[in-house]
Image (cartoon, rainbow, N blue to C red; front, side, top):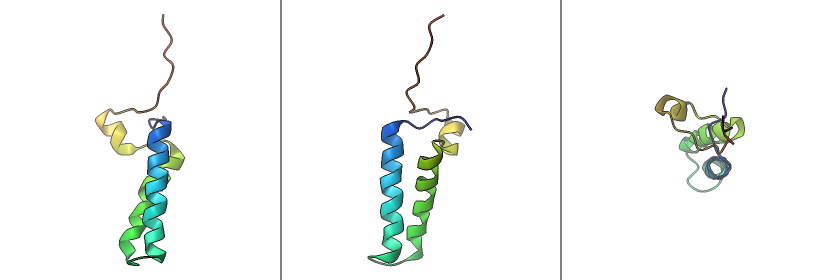
Length: 66
């Protein structure tokens, strides 16, 4: 898998995922909080399949000049 998530994007996904999962245990306690697993996994993997399909890339890689 090619990394297509930048640092800020990964941090935001990590925080959102953890908050959504926390809602399962605290707050409304609905199963919808488990949807937070998706952004959490994509943040840890550094790859978003939807970004790949749409051609987005927030990862700042150094490009060599030929």
